[in-house]
Image (cartoon, rainbow, N blue to C red; front, top):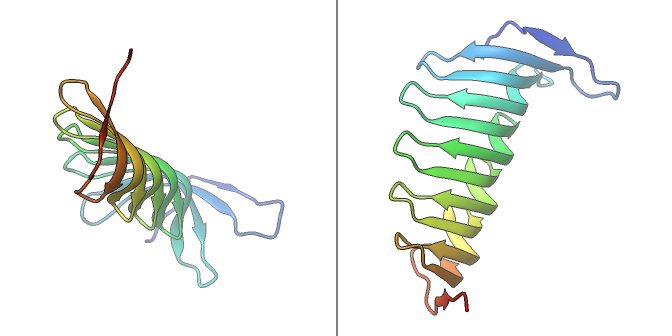
Length: 146
């Protein structure tokens, strides 16, 4: 990535300078946000930033080592949205995924898979809780408001 920084902040500690950039990739993707130079001079996304694609995918959140790492929000043009923790460009940790049809899962993710305790809200608004293992969720319980 070759960029011209729009603004540079110096780090009081002995870390690399933080650059605020706007960059358009050869494929038409665009990144606006913070970057840092690596020890070999390569500029990598690091800090807060927004990455958009020509087909309407938008990521707003934290970056580290040029990957989505930390908290963020990923929106798809279909209406699907993930908001939560990322690790190496994957849903990983606690998060919420709203599916294209409006159903919703809130809970744990492991490398893009629903994994662990969570709550699923179906298209009728009924809430189901339990332990999720990717596409399987044996023993789900309907959450009742009495």
